[in-house]
Image (cartoon, rainbow, N blue to C red):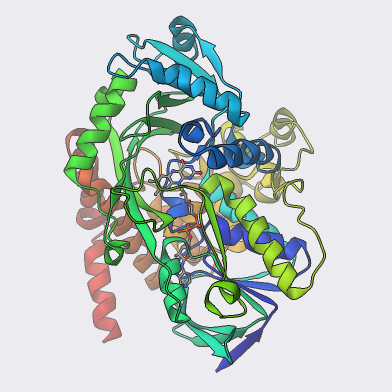
Length: 545
Ligand SMILES: Cc1cc2nc3c(=O)[nH]c(=O)nc-3n(C[C@H](O)[C@H](O)[C@H](O)COP(=O)(O)OP(=O)(O)OC[C@H]3O[C@@H](n4cnc5c(N)ncnc54)[C@H](O)[C@@H]3O)c2cc1C
């Protein structure tokens, strides 16, 4: 069996694992990351993308609130192209306890979170779609963060510093010798190859799957799987993050992101055996839309694009019903001290936006074990794309001859890497996705540089298929490019297209009414009625036989 030797093995390609890989690489430690699916395909790709100021946690969880505001400030510097510094409002509605407003202000002050009291008139000027019956408003430094870009940029930097990445590869066993974890057994689901990796330290950053990875090493770790649902609205209804000023509850955050807004979330404890069953039910959608409408009344008149859910990777504390009161705090476990298994460390809990801090904590511990003295630098080294070398307007001028909207969108998604993506050759800036203004050069860059193996991966790197048409008009063009770039055969491209449409369908199914239903029918008509895609797949299957 193939054997790879390294120093550190990272299990999980969510934000935490990607951040760990980067931190290891920047400290000169040879490292390999294993991800069973795609980068950011776990909880990292299934949240609000809210860059918390910490205000949401200020009343109940001071430690998390302080971590949030510290990381908020760091990420605004090192991850500029993954962040929109929108600002956020906490709004009290007539149904809410008016006393919570003052309480939140006091706790923010204590946690060191800037919090400014605004008149409702001023809040409405900042956010005209806000409920005009609001009683009071507070302004905090919330923002938005794109989890896909964030994870990809961390991986890109790690790879540029020598780290290796295996996506679509499961860790199926932890290899142990005399009470020490020395390696992992892996299975690549695409090539069906099995191989082993050996290293001096294994970092389990597999989020809510952490319990299963620990079980592979014979260790008991109980996660508290708390599911949250979210709904995406087909317009950017708000320009700043809008929070309801009350004890955290269902449907009280509306986050703008790229071309859409999303409303979240719910919180429901699920059985551990259900962590892969991420369906959203009618009740969850009803609650989210009803509560969202209270904050932004226009929400009920806007088309819903899709619904999705994620499971929080919290560590179990008995007595909690739905997970809202469990700390979002970071848990770092040295299994040598806790369970007598040397060479294995687990990091879990926390949030998307505390990924860097989590990575730093895990790598500090790894360094101690590996006797490496190099200090963390991820708090000051900008991610690839976030270096500030030129003003956006200068980039736009540099690409004279390419539509500004294409340059602007590429710049927005990839920051300073725009020069490696666009070139003046005409096919390079031909549009593949009109909703999100993704051009051919961007697709090629993602396929060649960002660990893209199929169309679903490409969606996470470029936003192809995330806009209003949900992949209806762009996915077949993108599938064709995989063949043209000679990274897939035409049969493989057809297979990717089917998988992509199936994947999009899952998110559209719970919200199929009105225009959404019409659009889904139209997509079906194009792909089955016009292209006969279902028949192509059947022919392929028969051919395989
Ligand atoms: C509804 C909801 C809303 C949220 N909103 C926000 C928010 O607005 N802001 C914020 O900061 N945080 C938010 N969070 C929290 C945040 O999303 C998570 O804390 C964070 O994404 C966890 O990242 P992670 O890398 O630790 O885990 P994951 O992203 O889950 O990564 C773990 C990875 O491990 C991989 N893996 C598992 N088993 C194996 C195996 N055997 N072999 C190889 N790989 C494996 C998985 O495929 C997965 O990709 C939210 C969470 C939820 C559920």
